[in-house]
Length: 112
Length: 114
Image: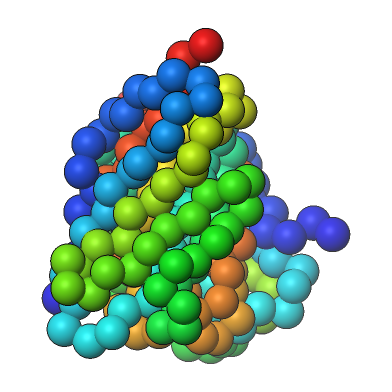
């Protein structure tokens, strides 16, 4: 069982470049989320989705776009990368209610 | 707005000693509370969760946490630390009752000394 799969694991971008972080889950979970992890700040919610076609902003959405065309996939797009977006990004999925959230292995992004 | 505060960004214990990681939350409604563990270069894994059933919650790897409404706390404990417990631990709250939208504390790094 693959669970939540994130690609790539590592990425270096130049300021102003765009890229998409991929996230896929094979558990048929309705809820999917993107977080960024920065030292001393824990994880902060960027965007989340409660089902295909439905997305909403989290705590730190600026500079990021998402869409959810299928239950399985929830890509995160950086339109114009900035050094402040250097971080580790985690995707998570879960069922409705206070169920366990399953996390991917993370994508370490460096913007130079 | 709900928030989570973890007291102590770094905790060091000797192997076999008690582990106590502190978490306080602010919430205007009964919360759902979680503890997650992150091993180096890995994603997060659920240790345990409180969902308004028993106030003492048992989790994996011998960890447990007690929900104390009067103190707005959800501290994580383990009677005897093992070297394999060295990791970063996160307390989180669900403001909506759905874990698609979690608010995390700042994290506590646990060091276990031989």
